[in-house]
Image 1 (spheres, protein in one colour):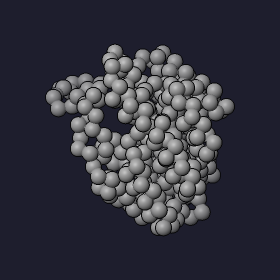
Image 2 (cartoon, rainbow, N blue to C red):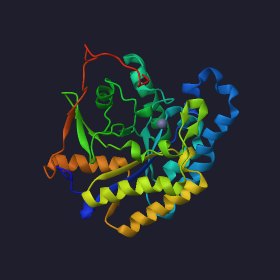
Image 3 (cartoon, rainbow, N blue to C red):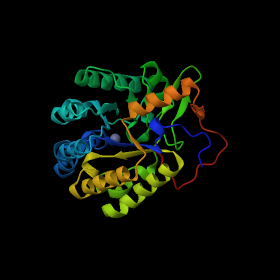
Image 4 (tube, helix red, strand yellow):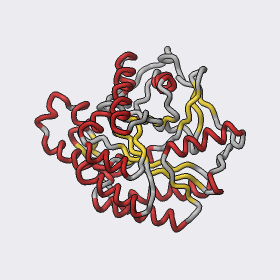
Length: 305
Ligand SMILES: [Zn+2]
């Protein structure tokens, strides 16, 4: 089913990473800045992430002795030291997720570089080390992002959706490991109904949501793929969903042959296999296009931005 399967460590059938994007109130300030101060209900919903959900999620993973990757905007790192302490003290990885959840593809080249560096500083101040991994806020990778990530020495990106297993991105001069996910593994589409953000999808019961996540896992297990969830503490850290997550972990453990890992570990493994020649990754050249195609009519039906 997969043309160029990657050998996983110790003969594992698949690799699994539950990753969390701890966005907290960065979403409120970046998207609704002018009126953010007058939206305490939405603020309280988003603060539930670092204040209530994070200790619960960290305790859940501690129970199974598993380490994960948390993508956290720099502003949130500075704002929520207790949650950050828990992440660091329990051996989890902190990945770069913008400074205040700004979308790179809506910034100028200089602003994108500025906020990328500002958030690197936040991570260095908190952890003592530069981040190895990056996930663009709202998957909004720009046509400059790969260049900046290579310049800043990142080991991997986890923003794109182009394969079932790791692959490489190149801008013609450097190469970066891409660890792809899929929208079916994002909890937003299952659980988020926030009128203020224009998200008006029905909220799924945890059992129904888990059917989707579990089906993706079963296929990953059968075919040797990479399973990366993109979950949000304020969303998936609610008690009912956290219980369902723990049941999913137990299901995966009982199935066996699963490599649970942080994304920096998966990226290092992919790099090693590629360097040693035990696996030949697909390589995507970015950007896909230098600009608009031209000569193509613009039609209704897709809202830009
Ligand atoms: Zn985010």
